[in-house]
Figure (spheres, one colour):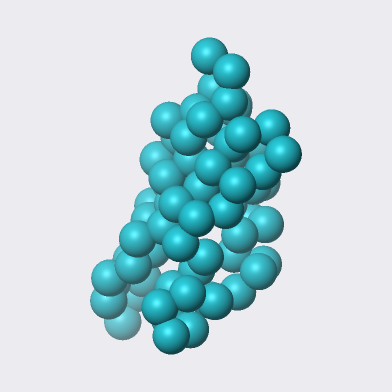
Length: 68
């Protein structure tokens, strides 16, 4: 079964920086929802936030925040 990673960048970060930060969340492991989901909400010092959604075929990361 193949899985997908979906990244929605709603922040002012360029795509490479958003991807780097999603990588930090992934490196933290699956720590939410009984160990099956990446951290529900990660907040960085510059007010960038990454929230996650999980279903059986994909992980979605939504990057938002920062100064517009």
